[in-house]
Length: 495
Image 1: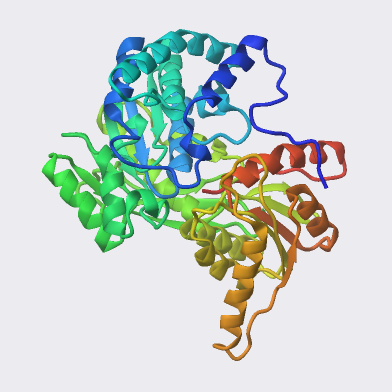
Image 2: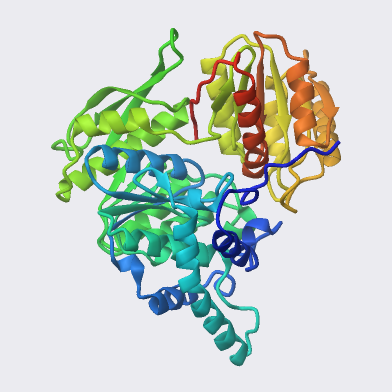
């Protein structure tokens, strides 16, 4: 069955110029819509990005940057830092990717997305530059090797931040780090949140190889904060920092944290402990309220606090009151976002083994003892067996579906067959095998409706597996929520 789709970047009350700008961006090479995006110096060329910015007037030199990479947690950590800096009174830019519904969400100033007309004006300035670079590439025998969608979008964000004369910008890496378009910035502080197995076709099949790509954002003499604790990837980060003369602040060595959930409200708290010598990170900060559920979000918050304390050492006036207020206010849509209650519906963008594990652990801790259903759709290039091995024992019913607006979607028939294979292997290895009910519903809205209809009021329904699935369903779920005035609404969050 088909439904009116709330597709990203469509059906918006913007001007024709804004729509034309988005159409131009979407006409470019877009690796976010490629099943196996390349990651090599030919496809991801920092020289091309630097050339694009130079022709635009080098807007990325107009503001200091905080640059954050990582397998998971980088978007949440960036959002937390930006929120705190705003509470401290600074004018702050935040660049994250991908977006859920509209491209302007990627470039926020003081907590608000870029207005469509502002993006249209910047793209109007960029277009002749891009066309010039296209011609230059063709004359050089490299036809089709002009700036990509992500490069142009990143340049537009950098120009937007420069136009506003912001005090500071927090940049989230898109893919990897070393070759990512954001890596042309000159950061005053860098961060690497975590290292895990994702985008292995692009970044490598070992944690060391992946860490090498993430550590590519480290710049000479610029302090680095990392939440990585595994020995193999941490050794790579330490070696890179040492080679470039960078102080490295490490989770577990220089700071640690404790996480707890208030059982009466489900709201979490994190306590930050400065374990560095001489209170290098400004001392302890106990009982900080979060609006983001999960142990992994507490880890992100602790790293954000460490980075903010490092900014204070550089002369930025922040203070513990701003840190508390900013972390309590920080939200990230579709990160363990509670869409409704009775029954509880959670929307999450987890799409790799690490983030799926964090999601399941958060549900176990925050919603114990509930009967659970799952709507799952993913991308073909993800570790689907690895994710399903974690999910299958945790849900009573699983509905396999696919997102519709991006060609990377995995066939839901294959998802279901993969689950059956894993369940068959499990049944021969344990005395009491888990056996969730599996159903195939190819349309995501139909899958949600069927799952919600078969769930009792005390149950829990989770929708996860892909950023693209969350992006398609969230506008529809929000519209349904608004139409149902009896639903108790609450947004929580995770990463």
